[in-house]
Image 1 (cartoon, rainbow, N blue to C red):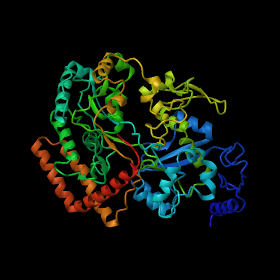
Image 2: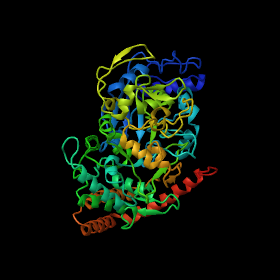
Image 3: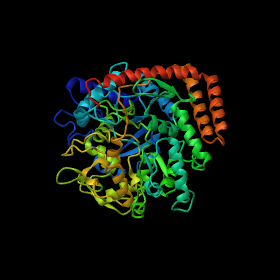
Image 4: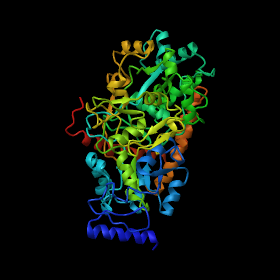
Length: 594
């Protein structure tokens, strides 16, 4: 047995026999009695030497050390540095084989790979050595149901993690992310014609491009700009459009009607996914789909939206949140929501057990207490605010009434995450030290790409129970920012996007404590072949030169998938949809959603 193994067993015995909290960040045995645990005198979390925590994050888009303001804050508060490892090809398998997933593990979902890590002993039990009890006051205060939910999905009944997007009231829905943002200033110039269907929207985008054929940089304008980075079982962008228009929930290799539990498989020629592909193909044939969509990254797409090369996005973070900079607003330009009359925008209920992305701690971590301390802070209201908005006092704070407000710098960073912070000074209220920041705001954002609280949840530290989302803060409501926004408000009769979307005939999708079932090795092999073919066929269909070619491509993709075992994958997905639907109904017990 290695030294670390002997050490951990020694500490575990000490904790058990003398009711002391202890493991350690060195190879020296450290006992901490109850009067010191979690306090300034606790050497397990108040380390004099800087600790590097390895964060293996499946959804991360970053590789390497955390930098920028985020690194400065973590070093000041906890004397830690983070080394982020994304889940590139083979990374999960390699780390599982070595038995070391890292100190903090962020799972893309709570399905097959997470369960394999649990069953093979690669994650630490949060209740072992009183880890949760001693070092997680915020988690214990706010998220008992989330802990119970994690216990329920593990075969041994132990706790190995906590989900993201947590809240306390399942009757509330989360923020709308499908906002149907369109260039309202151009729409206004067209006389604001009716938009009832996707075909109507395509026609409007064509007319808009005629009004403004090039962007701020002189390069061509397109109706939409897509990216393949986030494709999963299906191509992400058409899948989200289908959700935004039909109000369905993604399950397996299809989309589920949340009112009936019925699943429409991805390649159903009359299903919502194929209809979304058809819409993007129509845009392509009209010269309205960015031809780089199949190969560009999300970051490249973002740059185009900021430069005014994109007229529409069904996603707020792919449109309005990027385009509505001070420069565009000053020029009386605006991207604002315009939901087609026949659309039923999907919005998810808030969950007391969280979504499918989990935070865990690796079983081989030398610093489990430190990892838990950092996680617990992330699950505090201030930690959640930091994930989204930066450093308290420098970028956001509470006003005299206890409501959330941006500083001028924070407002600038929120409007433009590329804001350069080089030379900005911050004096820590924790240590009194003054730091000079570097890099952009976006560089410093905590790069594990996961959340704790839901943005649509009420912040318990806000005196008026404001939601975490700045879009709902009292301080961010006010006079229209330009003439275009004034016209949008008058036309919709609302003050902001979230309020407007609440007035539409949206589709409420209850949250559920659902975990995807494990596929057999034989089915998993077929599954990987099928989803690869679905995604490749989807992109080819979107780039079809004629409608006839589009239909043939869908048929060709279906035939190819049938050869891989598509029918079995669909049958598995339908059973999953039924399982999830039943849990969704259970979550609504006693909840009035009218």
